[in-house]
Length: 173
Image (tube, rainbow, N blue to C red; front, side, top):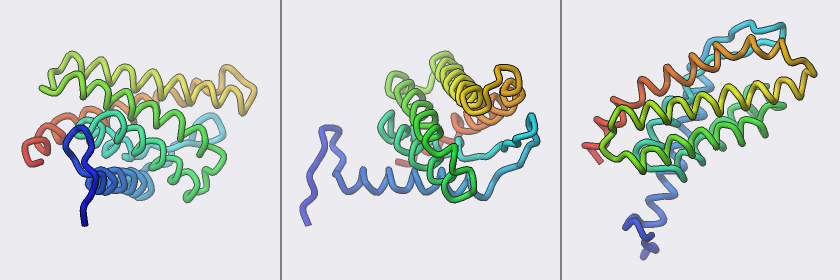
């Protein structure tokens, strides 16, 4: 079987497998490693789905990061009873994965300053995105503020864990 080779030198089949694995790992970690948190009467959760999202984005760039975030977390929402959130997670988590992957492409040495900037961007996208969605859904500007610390904690924890793991994994691939 002869597979087409992409400009980066990786076969299309290899890229497909990596992207599928990234999506699956984001879905599985969000599905099985989470803590429900009561927030402003509507509830919420902290999950570790962002950890593989960041790892794959750091290792394979913005396309894989965006696909892992968008499809992995939207599927999680669909399969775990958070169906209303699926289209929003698709956009927000896709943008987070894209931002982290873009930063990794521009920072292949994993220097701390550019990586910290990408964490900041991911936090802005996550916090701002979900805050605005909650404002839209619930018609209240104050109540959604309760989810800000939870979203910040989730993204920051995943990003802090992802950088050393991605750095070690980079040596193996």
